[in-house]
Image (cartoon, rainbow, N blue to C red; front, side, top):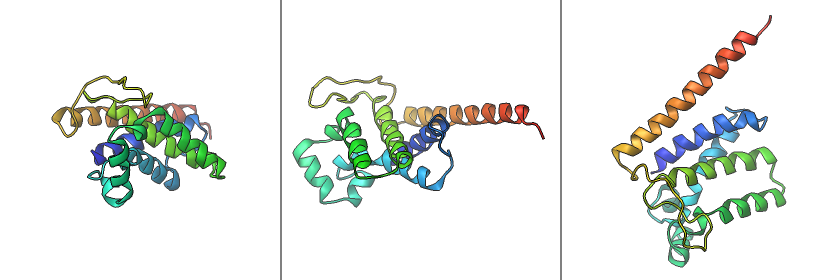
Length: 164
């Protein structure tokens, strides 16, 4: 579901950005992480992004189906490579990629899993919840709680180390 993907994508970016030496709360980076968290579902015409990208989403769904190439390792590698070759900044590509990867990770928590090695039929996953279920809300809440804890403990340690 779009809302869950956005929350998890934002959380993933907030945690990943410092490791990439980029600002966690930079508006452009946050927007790119959100875009990346929704982009894999361009292969589903009824998804949030699919409804906004018709007829592209319809064509992709007809040719390749849902959770095909756009939900694979090939897609994220190709997307990042194309953007870097086109001259996009590393930070922007990183934010988009983190959001995209967060979408794939979240979808791997469903019983359907993902075909990360598309076109291989092998699926990968850890079936913890179904989309739009009560358990999905629990997983998203746990992610948000974990990120809040991470931010809080990080900020406390930064404050403790601060010297005027």
